[in-house]
Amino acid sequence: MSDSFHLKNKIALVTGAASGIGAATARELAHAGAQVFIADLNLTAAESLASELTEARAIRMDVTDSASIAEAFARISHLDILVNNAGIGLVGDIARTSEEDFERVMRVNVNSVFMVTKAALPLLLASRGSIINIGSVAGSVGVKQRFAYCASKGAVQAMTRQIAVDYPKELRVNCIAPGTVQTPFVEGYLEKYHSHEIEKVRAELVARQPIGRLGTPEDIASLVRYLCSQEAEFINGAVIPIDGGWTAA
Image (cartoon, rainbow, N blue to C red; front, side, top):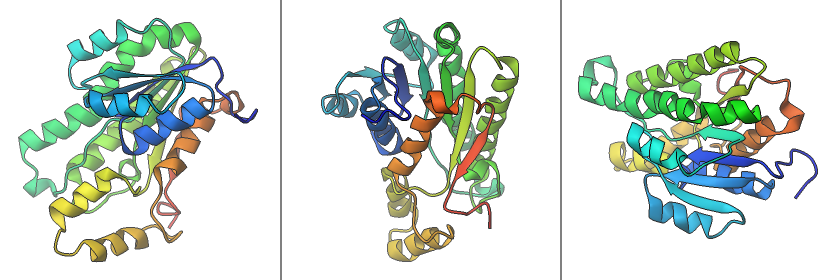
């Protein structure tokens, strides 16, 4: 464990932590010395990841269900770090987005951040903790055929800034806005919508980021670790892109 950006004796909870960015974040925080609650709807996958890490514990959580969230937090007596990572995507412009699909995206990507953060707030206020919301560049720029997703990630950015304004001395809250990251989330999108041209569309996704590659879950996890650390104590209410230059271009 490096002395820089260490999280020794900190307790963290990561939602959607059984795969992708969430899993990489759980690993990174554990390697930095934190005790990590791996919260996911897929308890089996969460338990598998927890078995690989020191001081990690799997916990079932449906981030869209207040009872499930309450049950999970009833088992947590102290919390220093909350990473709101759980989320879903949806392809379609406004004309092709149904009311049901729009509500589902907002429920998972927006309502969950509200409900999980509200449940965690007493613990985080007690510890002067840190919240990291995993947003997206889609909250800052328009992405074609992502009407509901852009709306949801814009809301995540707004919630981040608002909470920082209300609790500027009591806790820190920041938002990370990744570009396209190589995860099961992206692979599922390619299989569902572009199964006949996966490599072509993958190349288009890479070209969208000037650096010339997709992000990795570990890229994002490293930034989470930094933002949770003592070295980042002057960063609050920030939305930080990590997108290979996409939004700069």
